[in-house]
Image 1 (cartoon, one colour):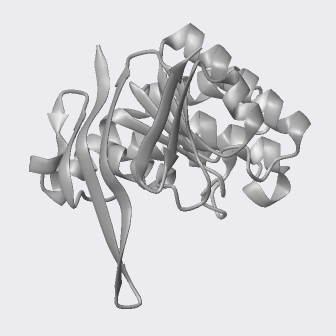
Image 2 (spheres, rainbow, N blue to C red):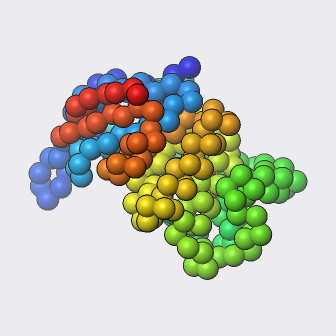
Length: 227
């Protein structure tokens, strides 16, 4: 099953009166259950591609189909609904809500979806166990290490049970030992749940774990290798 299909994707930005061509006719397809990395130097377009696939930004040209939906034909409201229901995000800055506890950060997406309180409690407890954070439910993000905060971010992404998780430089703020633990955790969840993971990265360790590496340069696909 195809989870993401990009056809002739173009994304331009205006910057200081100039046009930046972030993506120039990208064609890529990702199937269910992949554990893939999009690699490339800064400015290559890898984060831009993730933001488009995750409905956080809109195309300049081409199409991206996510879970059978043509995002180019959708309104911002429709994109928000698709994002809320079907896509999980893991950011390098974690993007946790500082005033909420671990438990509240994780359960927040389910509250937005209108899931009943009993199911929210059960799913939050399960995902806390999955990421090894049992006993830390009441802590605030500032009381946790970077690796623990990234685990909370992973749990928050997983709790919706999305078909697709997009991880933008997920190891960038972690030392190599913690980064490896986080990757092992995500790989185990990928194998257990069949969730599709797509990373943007310039970290060789992430590329070593990935089963497919797409390399971008200057907004174009330079290579696409399945191990």
